[in-house]
Amino acid sequence: MAKTKEQDAASRDTDNHSLIIAMAGSGKTKTLIDKVELILSQKITNTVLMVTFTNAAVNEMRERLEIRLSKEDFKRVRVSTFSKVSLQQTKGLMKGRLLIGPMYYNFNERLVSYINSEALLEKGKVKKQDVLDVLAEQYSGEYLEKEDINIIKETYTELKERNHVYDLEDAQARNIEGLKSKEIAPLNVSHLLCDEFQDTNEPQYTWIYEHAKAGSIITAVGDDDQSIYSWRGALSYKLMVKYKNELNPNVHLLTKCFRCRPEIIARTKNMIEFNEDRIPKEMESFKKPGGSVKIYQHLSNRGQYLTFLENYTKIGGEWALLCRTNSLLKEAAVFLTENNIEFTTSNNKSIFDTPAGHFIVKLSCLLLDHNKYANFTGEILGYLKENEDVTTLIVEAIKSKNDVKTVLEDNNIEFEKTVFSFLYLNGHLFDESLNLLQVERFANEILEFIIEQRGTDCAIEKSLLTALIGKNKTWKESLATYAERLNPEKETEELNKNIVSLFTFHAAKGLEWENVAIFDVVEGVIPSGKAENTEEERRLMLVGMTRAEERLFIHSYVAWDEEHILPTDDVGYAALYDASKEERVAPGSIPTKNKRVLSRFINEILFEDEEVAY
Image (cartoon, rainbow, N blue to C red; front, side, top):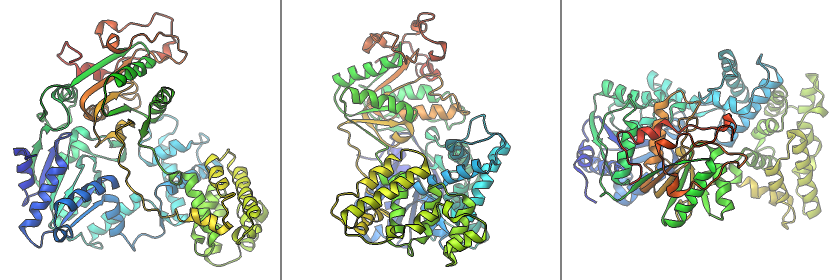
């Protein structure tokens, strides 16, 4: 497909800093690749670094560049994530091991146990999710006071130092510090391209700015209307204004959507223009009219499922069902399962990517070779609820090659009451065994101890350990099958669009389907009742709406019907929104707490328009 004038102008701007505002589906990736190709053709000394936020985006960009560029030109391009670049630039400067993935969540659990066991908060015990939210700067509850939040953050820092670990934010902060002090040299690239610029936070922008000062020409590409990550510090519109003021980039607008039909773009534009903090822009579809937007107002939440089923049965092609939260996705998943509709989700992770699976992998490594993997001891003890002070003594003793039992007894700690004593007194678990009955006994011994320490049914641990039994392998061969998972090569699976995609709005970003149904468009869900920023909620709704290529279905309702009291005959055409149907639930027929109000976004989508369905 030929380039539009907007795309051509943006891709040819190679000698100045630039800001490309690219609306959803406007071909920003193609524009970036065109620009990279031109940059490399202009000078043999030109080099390009492209940074983005996810490995999936990195892989997609790299694959497209490899197809477009010659082998020699491809060698002058590097595509990476902000996190990976920070880790590489601070290599040798960060001490300890990186907290990431399941290891981070297991460490967080240890943090919660420590805070609660030491009674650090006056209010009492804290929940794991609250601590995760605090560390992600996402806490919006009322239980924790400012002082509690500070204690959680300080304790997290203390435990990181004690356990010789660091997280991505630590690496990023160290990188910025090093760049500013000249301890770390800026990357030697002539051009730096930043994708999804609207999701950049203050430290990441500082990193970009330091490279601009060092001579790199910056291209920032993003859409302020699609900024949905303020909880991790994304600055959105404010960042784009700052970039414009500080580096004076040329500004390019990509305003033509190649994905959505005009009917979808028109409705989306109606809504997003209610946001005040945004860059004004035209929003047009490159396609001819022929799409549809249907908005339903059901009597109950169950009605939306039945209407979806009716539409899904009548209309072929690709389908996505989007919800605001994972808990609402589970409700939808139950319905799809009951109706034998095959679906996929964005959460199809390996069992080894779970905290429990990650623990079994590291325990297997330790049992295989306790000298090589001694540095996993602290994590393993922490997962098994060992006291943090005791864990610190044990880890330091192992590091100093001192006898753990003697060190603990010297500190007036009863060795037999520690988690470590299980490993210390059961040395046979570290030995080889060819006897299948012994393999079964070893696996059961470990499982029983895990359940005793964790106080839960430990379903994942049980599944993985019982899977070792009866495999006609020795004990160490069995452990090796899990130890091999320590650093697996992760392949990006292509999304199967032959079945329904069941995603949250956030997970759906960057994807597209012919038909998209958005569920639960009621006040308190979208926009969320916890959201402080309604404008971001509106941007989130825009992301969901612009996933649809041909047909968009928006579902609302006036009651959450847990007891199945209300009729569900308002499906399909009968449930299309009508302002006169606001009061459709008979007084007293359903508890007040279960009543719902149509999302304000629906009225905005229909702004100055009487017709609802095309």
